[in-house]
Amino acid sequence: MSWLVLLLLLVGVGLFWKYPALRRTWYWLPRRGLVAFMYHHIGVLTDPTEEQYPFTISPEMFEKQLLFLKQHGYTPISEDTAVEAYKSGKSLIEKPVLLTFDDGHADNYTALFPLLKKHQVPALIFLITDRVGTPGYLTWEQIKEMQQSGLVRFGSHTCSHRRLRSLPDEEIKQEVVNSKRVLEEKLGTPVYSFCYPFGAGGFDKRVRPVVLQAGYLLDFSTKKGINPWPWKGKSSLLRAFPRGGESLWEYHLQLTRGRSRL
Ligand SMILES: [Zn+2]
Image (cartoon, rainbow, N blue to C red; front, side, top):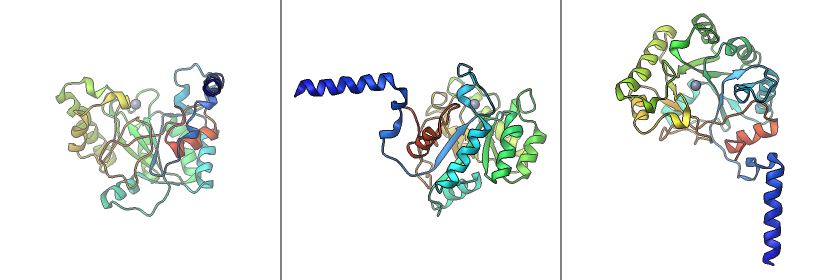
C-alpha cells in the first residue's frame, strides 16, 4: 500500500515538473472580495525574454479581460467608489474589480485610454511625479485629459520611485508628502491613493504609518491576493498581477484566487 502512495506521489511530482500549467492555483478555493489588478504597460511585446514582457499586456488581451469581467458579472469600480466604501464601511457591489496601473507610462494614454473610453471602464494610475513629462512617461496635458474624461483617477507612486524602506525617515516623508502635494496642485483634487515602489519588498512597518499620516486612504502593495470588501484599511491592499502572455484561464485564476501561479 505504501508503495502505491509513493508511486502516486512520484507521478504527481513528475506531472507538475513536466507541465508548468499545473503549477497554477486552480486547486485553491475561489474567494470573493475586492480584486485590485496591478498593470503596467498596454502594448505588444512578442519576445518572452524581454524584461518588460510580464509587465506588458496586449491591447487585444486587455479587451478580452474587460469583456470577461462583463460576462461574469464583475463591476469595474472607480477609485471614488473604493473610497466611499472604505469611509462608509458598506457597498452593494458584489464583485468589485479595481484596475490599477503603476508608473504612469506613456502607453497608458496612447493604448489604454482609448480602451477605457470604448468600454467606459474606470482606472487608477499611479504617477511618479519626477518622471511626468520625461521620455516614455505621461505628460501633464495627457493626465489632465484623462482626468477630465471622468474615467481615470491618479494616485502617488512617490516622487522618485526609490525603495522606501531603504531611506531615512525624513526622505520617506518627503517622497510621500511632496508627491501628494504636487499631484493635488496639478490635478486640483485630493489624492487618496498611494502605491509603494517595489511592492512587497519595498516597504516595512516604518513606512505605512507615514503614508496614512500624510492623508492617503488607500495604500497598494504588490503582495498578491484578494481583499476583504468593503476594505477596512487594516493592512495594505493586495493586488492580483495579470502577466503578459497569460491566458484567459490564468486571468480567471487571478480573479478568483488573487494569483495565477504558485
Ligand atoms: Zn513602480
